[in-house]
Image (tube, rainbow, N blue to C red; front, side, top):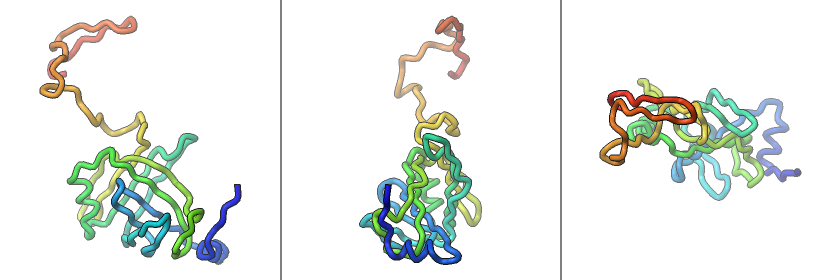
Length: 171
């Protein structure tokens, strides 16, 4: 498969030293980059100095884990944490050169969802996980009263696939 790279990227990858930059889309509205403000895909990606994409790991199905470190001074990272954005889609691409970037310039690194996070004085760290990951930090939805009132009572025995389960108090 051939790709037509813009002259900006062609120049960047032919330089002796080239620094890659990430394009990060959070949800459908937030577009940031750890490089200079650029355009790609008909959209503007705002520079966010201090933004870091770390701990990328992937398997044959795509991105499995990563961490998005957002500097607290912007308010973006803490705002995302306090807004309860677990399960918000995040897409990360890699580009070279300052842009503007052509359609084929960015390489998709992965698609994920926010899977919890922590904050410190200077950083908010957002954990990213594959949307269908079995290793997510905790259940996202709970079937419990008053939303769901048809749960068997505590101590109820349930037989399933040859196993006997007994519901614990508070379950």
